Length: 279
Image 1 (cartoon, rainbow, N blue to C red):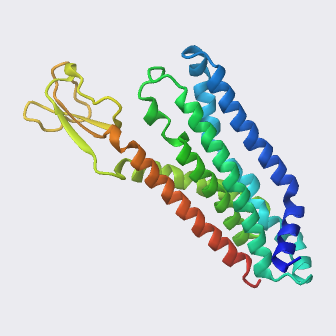
Image 2: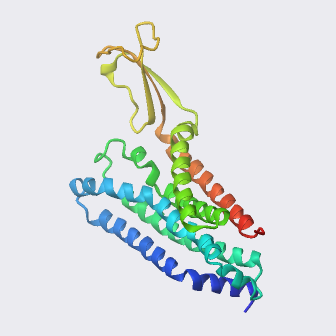
């Protein structure tokens, strides 16, 4: 048995309980999504399940990072068990590589299973059951679920390697995960691709394109200048809309998912570097 194989075996022995729980949760989540998609009533049943499933998928990456990523390295540092491994012919680098390799390998599998199930569930939601369903469910589409699960776990591993204490690492992981996801969604996401603009002469005519995302509406006066925020408007008030067209949805998904996958890779590297430093 090679040194790296031995290190991987030790990593598995130390974390097999957490890995088993994570695997069961991923399998249960995927099974629930598929069962709901195939058995819920096309309109009433699916609508009832929509909110809680959406929330569950949105918080799952943070939960994975807090409870499975953060303790991976931090627990060994905190208990001092890592030092025992380093005296058994396993270097610090091999120990860290084995733990991180095992974590990310299992995470890739779990993230893929949940992402595929999420996409199956979304595909069975009637298009007219929720207004603009595609954009409403932006954060729980398959690519985003996959990317954010990896990001959450990598962030937890990096926090654990830096702080070397489990509870503080869990708290930092949750805070940073929420902060970065909210900041990206509000500041960067609406501008990932160039927006489209449309001028509508009368409010009563509607004018918002079907399946448009991130719509910003500005009401105008007769000279097409923005009205003050406290001004009233009626059915003949012109307005300008800025939006992302439906054709931008999947390119934006790929861009944002790619960003978080790259960030996850950088965090894994950072976790490795901090875990192998002296002190």
